[in-house]
Amino acid sequence: MMKHNQKREITLPINAINKDKRTIEVAFATETPVSRFFDDELYYEILLCSDENVDLQRINNRGAVLFDHQRDKPIGVVLSTRIDSDKVCRATLRISEVGLGENMWGMILEGTMSHISVGYNINDYYMESNNVFVNKWEPTEISLVTVPADVNCSIGRSLGEDNNFNKEVKMEEDKKEERETELPEEEGIEEECEEVEEEREEEISDEELEELISKRPELLKKLKDSEEEELNSNEAEEPEAVDVAEEERKRELTSIGAVLQVDVSDAIENGISISDFKRSLNTTNNKTPNHDKEIKMEHKSVINGLIRAANEGKPFDGQRLDVPLNQIVRATSTGAATGGALVKEQHVDSYIDVLRANSIFAQLPIQTYSGLEGDGNLVLPKLSSDFTEMFAFIAEGEDSPEVDAKFEKLVLSPKTFSGSVPITRTLIKSADTAERYVQSAMVNGAGLKLEKEILTKIIAAAPKQTLTAAITHEDVQAALGQLAAANVRTENVVAVVHPSTAAVLRSTIVASNTAAKFMIEGQRFDAWLCDAVKVIESTQVAAAQIVFGDYSNIVLASWGGLTVDRDDTSLRASQGIVLRTFAYIDHAVAHEEAFLVVKLA
Image (cartoon, rainbow, N blue to C red; front, side, top):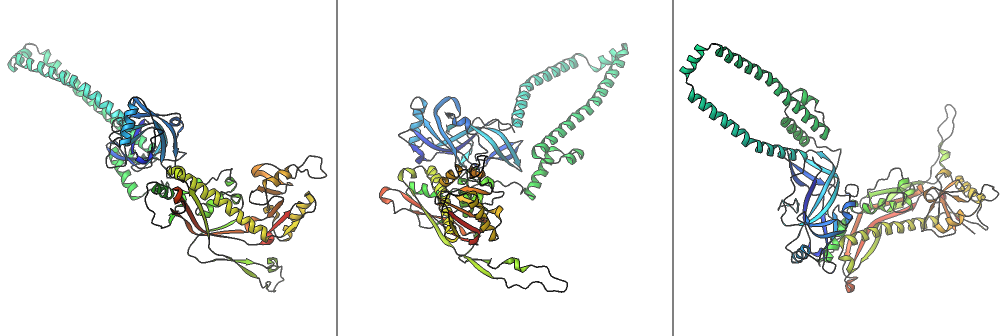
């Protein structure tokens, strides 16, 4: 496949036009398959639209807006591009006020020019059966076009410059042109030869030829020798032609094997033709689909659809809509900024996993139970007695220790966790911007709120200790000793503090030391209190206190998924709407003695 410039077309919605700024908001690429023909076979090209697949650097550098992909007909400039959560590449274009741009702007306003096409370079791709997945591509320009290549598709190719989809087609066309240019000359030569032969036949008859040979016998010998030489040359040329065809077959089979990563050794040895080998590949792929790679085609965003419907004045039927997790997980960062990189393995399969990733609990090994069905309670057993009494060394013949273990119940029930996100009239007009705003509130805001609720419950239930003087190294060791006495492993203890408290401790020198050691050393996600306790900062705890504990004793559960409701009445006076989210979540502290709150003087 040749990595040349390609074209795709999409229809421009009318409500994306800003008459004052002469800008239009367009979607110039999606993951919709587009048919391509390669070696007389139908393939489907799929542009993967995500941040790691699309290189927007060139188009964002004031890329050109053209008419029908003609470089000598610029009509505007690309102001910005982005890739939204619905895996659609969108751009904001400004149309020129002079020349052809003014004419195009008038046609856009009246609705007669509504097709958008993108030119792009393919940098990398891979194939699965008849699907060509382009995983590295670069948009180069965006054009207004008149006629799409496929009128039955919402996204197709623009007519015109689409003959360079692959190298093989280009080479085949070049060969065809060469044959067409050489064909008249060859035909002319053959016609001349035929005319000469006819003339010679007319000049010398058979009787005259026999008479000539009888007079000159050496001519007959020369004629026989020339026939033998011609026969020998033909026999020598036939093996060479066979060898060339065989080498061509092996070379093409080897190329197919390298591209599709399949074994072609049997096909080469058994003399299988190229067409038969391709047919066997298609049959195998149809019978045994490849499950190693899964290409996900995302559906339209639920939140985006609600906002666009409000902008178009469509009434809301009042039914709550379920939000798929993959539509909000893009707003979640699992990098170092949120501590996600410190979690060895993180499974994001529910709303609480997304919220956890946007809180300090991304760095803490809390217990999560997600995907619970129905409205029933989650009941977990809780051992309240000393489990060490259950084990002992016994003599030969003695019975195993009999201990009446005391268990309590840890009950979690589904509680409604809801939030409201107001959207103004101006924000509604830009559905994609509003969608990102709502997602940020649903993920970041809700994550901080859940963090605060959990920390508040810990502080309320945990034992407390109040210092009468400035904290010292001995106070930290005493706190660790108290937790160890409650069977808490000290290597699992983490200290959560407010950023202002952490700043004070970073400037507090450990007493009686000559090495200028401070209470807290290290920054960000590698901070330690007295070289013994890992420190995590949170704005959701009060200042002047330290919350020590083993946070694996926190239990977080969720029932069902996330639903969203559109409220059209609360902000009707200002033409705004409110999106309300609903989830069913509960949390609990399994062992209060695993925590200790130290209040500073």
